[in-house]
Length: 118
Ligand code: SF4
Ligand code: SF4
Image (tube, rainbow, N blue to C red; front, side, top):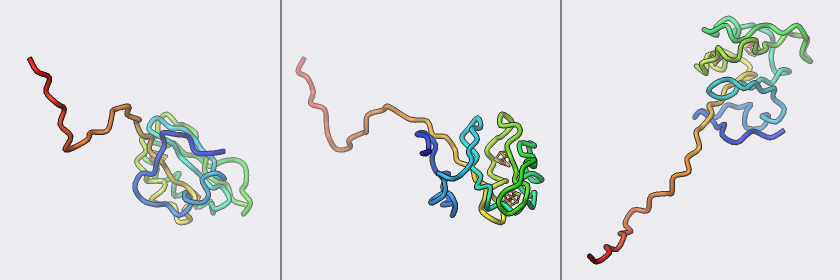
């Protein structure tokens, strides 16, 4: 699976996203996406607890370490604030904001359009 076009880095280089984005679980949310490397999660629940919109909940299944990872229960409620990413001690969860693509031609500075004679 490759990352969809239109979703890009929010600015900070998250250690996990560079190499592991293809292994991560991915949920679409209104302004972008939430990624999770389940097997890096130690089930501390910080991301669930600190999410201001109650987007995340504890999954019923176990990861490879024997913990319950988070899962996105209410994607529409996510405001992409990044708190879940900020509080995760294991770099297991992160967010990426969707970009709006533009079809505008690049602006060439220093080139003048010749005037058409009247
Ligand atoms: S980005 Fe913010 S609103 Fe969305 S899941 Fe993470 S903490 Fe919750
Ligand atoms: S904060 Fe990180 S380690 Fe803790 S439950 Fe969430 S994803 Fe797992």
